[in-house]
Length: 270
Ligand SMILES: [Zn+2]
Ligand SMILES: [Zn+2]
Image (cartoon, rainbow, N blue to C red):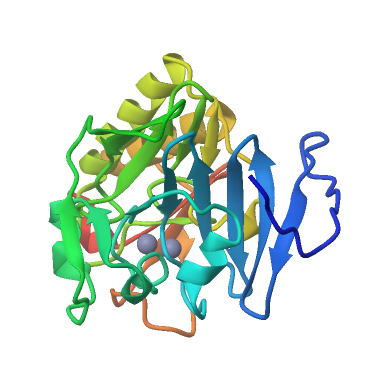
């Protein structure tokens, strides 16, 4: 199929080794680079990210970003296949342009957070549901805590997953309403560990511009241990989290264990 690549390839040297990403599109809101065979990352200038996965029959857009004028047309420069639009969770920086698409898929537990003005069709996904793109199967895995309906999307054949903000987006924010307990997050970490033991090796997170690489077990294990130490009161790393913007609670704290960081509300650990 004929494709239009608007910009010359750039090769980026990334932390942890040589990872080549080929930039294929850019406008004033975003740039698109190829990550893997038939997989692209869209990075917005305000550091959110989306992913496009293309099979032989259909394609999938994971998340819809923040300010991305005519996102539907932008995606069409990459693939013209029929498109599933999956939302990892309903925060505005992941579901910001759903108005450009006639239907979206998300977990029902996140409808409380979704922009109520959306006029399109909302399909609910469930844990274990599989989207067959033709030669690529993408599986839904429910990973609550950052939001009640956060999902991770698995491409088991490629060993990749797309985690939204459930894992890896700079700090994992657990201080937001509706609150989840730390035990809920520990359960999600353990579920992710099991998936990684079964062959997922790469976590592509919902704010890729902050990390510029896939995360691995070297990230996930310290994250699970950090969540456990917060739950059982043994963490010694926590300090007040200061930010100029309101982030959902009065006295947020941030705890750190190697590459893992959790922002949380000490009033809502249990
Ligand atoms: Zn979020
Ligand atoms: Zn986010």
